[in-house]
Image (cartoon, rainbow, N blue to C red; front, side, top):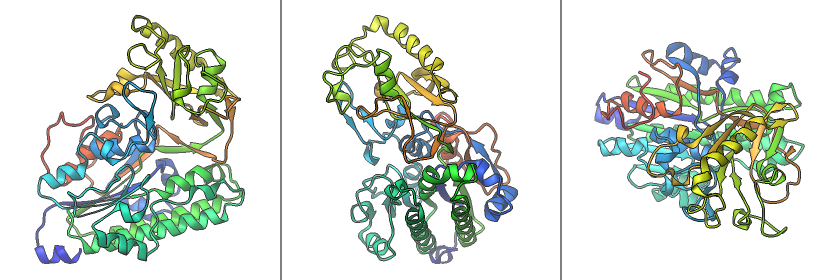
Length: 446
């Protein structure tokens, strides 16, 4: 219990949420003998695997997790989104999220929130008592509110993100050291403000797990050179989760969740290279670098991860597919994607039509199709430099739609057939905040 709780003496329910980006439930459950704190959360409360969203991309997942709404309502579909009526693209930031976050709802009800390192929250909001933005923020000075937060974070060598470029080296030692330093400072900041701030909702995200997984997951699954270092990192994470749990009082519920699962990456699939090779995509000249370089002969193009767009008349500037042909063309593309074979079998687990995944006022930039790949196929969508459809880069781990994780330190919670959309209504129930049952795409797990 923090100082302010002792002073105010109230017993209002409180929630401490800790995100562990990209951590699969099976990884933790298979090692409950080593990860004793995760095991205790599962035993004393509820735990299990949950589904992510379509597509399972962190930039889209965290807005959906924190709002309980699908990308058609948040307006964020991935790391890169397309402007309405244009081939221009942009990287979504916090202001592009067009739905209330769970802390927005809490503050409107007179509750205080401390929010730290959540992806897609730059610039920091000022309706909470404290926020440092996460992934995609340009630097601590601009990402922290209020000003004294930046001074503290710089003093403990806090990093918004681990240095993923270090993971490209065959020798992973420097990358692993940097990941540990990032994790250590993140824990120190969380621990400090759990004690210092008078919060009703604490919301913090450890993103370094995603970075470790991208570059070491194959070592873990296939007994590679760095398997022990991988597990040692997770032992430290488990220890930090345990220490944070011990700081919470009896009126506070701990919730831990990831935004997607993870698996070993066997092959990258360069989707635009496949589209070009199969006559769907054409460029105005050979020196193409971006989406705007496609020609008016193009029928379809792709953005990461696995998002496919029909080059539709009236929607795209140089649309080539008449509206009356849209369904026929989309069905043909869907069937070809479903039939696509890679080096170790079918690429697609399934191909999702936009009407089945996205609903809301912002579905005008929704992809027409989204491929959820089978484990091992990581879907890429660059516009240059890939003559071959299949390849392998420096990463050996990839996101998965299934096998995200959720732990709720409340025995009344039931985690069964749950997904990311269920988290926000569950947090609001734990905070005893009323909401409309139709306000979210998910439902409470209590």
